Length: 244
Ligand code: 6PG
Image (cartoon, rainbow, N blue to C red):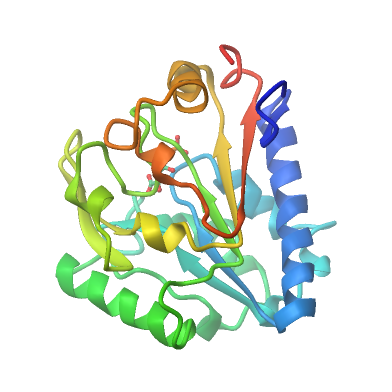
């Protein structure tokens, strides 16, 4: 898109999902060729679900070396995995239960129990996987955007958004009152590839603000996601792009 070089607009959410699945396959093969593994931080919410479903079907499923793929989550709602609100639950149904990925390659954020302890445990998992690195170096981070400009569970004017040392922290959706656990901004910003998936007319105004204004991350947490040594791309549908 004119003067938004890293924004790709797709006519429909289905075309967007197909393009996102194709990029996943591309990054997976690049990474497994380079370092024999592919680490991904998955997004929650509704928008990525179709991408996960597509990855579990041909022509995508057989082009991915699933035994080399390591799935992590960018955030989770503080609910058990069988709860309809669970990001892990959604991803398990759409993808994980349908592909030959070793269970040890899937690291879910424990949503049930003590959020503080679960956040620390997840950070410990990431620190041992990214052994010795000052921050995690995900090969791919998938993110969505809420109508308020939040991403993962990094909400406007929140302590989680301002975190500068932890990789994973508890968070809270003040609008719904739901407790969450989220990977932090610095941890996302050390990724190789960050891909935002945004669909729907309801997000058009906010997306315009995010891409065309310098409001700032306190109000628009999405604006805090600026990879330090990696690329950032936006896959949006025509409805979400209608005001750009
Ligand atoms: C979550 C997500 C969240 C999501 C946005 C968009 O756990 O809810 O991580 O950040 O990406 O809220 O959600 P939709 O895709 O459902 O619109």
